[in-house]
Image 1: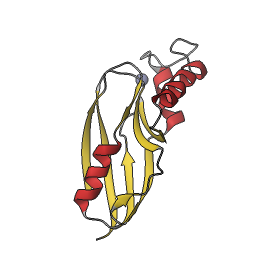
Image 2 (image 1 turned 180 degrees about the vertical axis):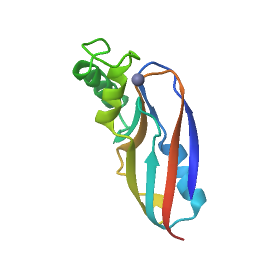
Image 3 (image 1 turned 30 degrees about the vertical axis):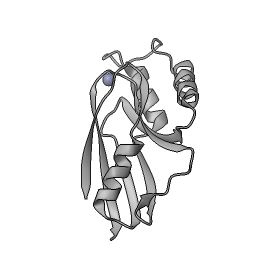
Image 4 (image 1 turned 135 degrees about the vertical axis):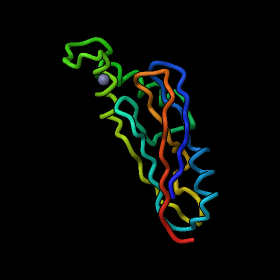
Length: 133
Ligand code: ZN
């Protein structure tokens, strides 16, 4: 099964945690053992798994992405959001998680974050679940 998550981002660039919403979809699916894929159908947003215990970690990631790929630079893309496309590619557009005993097998410190690089906008995450009930 596949379910859509609607996510409203609030800033031009941000990481927004969606772990709780993905966990709910996994629980509702009734799948006990399997895999969960979270895919973002966008070219200027991405998805990653990283630490959610200390919010400074995602802030550091965001700041370093900005250092690596500055908003203004020598880009060719005429739309003016080349930096957002590049950041999205660095982060990636999907994550795959194991489902074990009906729960996402995330580590204690891990969370799932949508990365917005050209917001604020309405975004989507597609959550696909395959497995045994
Ligand atoms: Zn563009």
